[in-house]
Length: 147
Image (cartoon, rainbow, N blue to C red):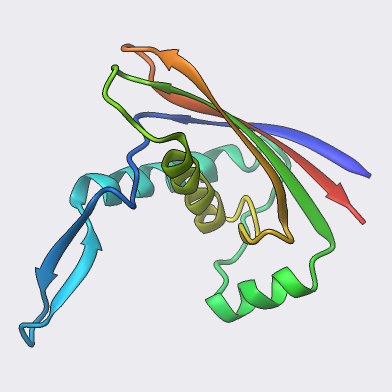
């Protein structure tokens, strides 16, 4: 049995991978963290996905620990295929693979997907939609298949 649903992220997608900065912790050791703009984008993405979950028929899922996500990958009963079209606000060079990674992380943290491991997300297609200076966004189509 399959089910399709769509979610939209309104905003610019920053690559968490390319938005790292080095800060020193209380002991003076360096730590690598995402910069404030990437953290703000991720928080906004999670909020937007949460607000759309009742509309697509998903109840809010409880956040899982990393161990629970690993077990979910082993005992999964559903698989997902993802198709995302991304519109950027300008012609600044951005990598689609890094943007899709940020989207997947946001969907996992919001509870839209149980995890983004390869046994659960079996196919990803990312398409550049072009430049939309007024409404940068990502339109995501998800197909959920039950075994």
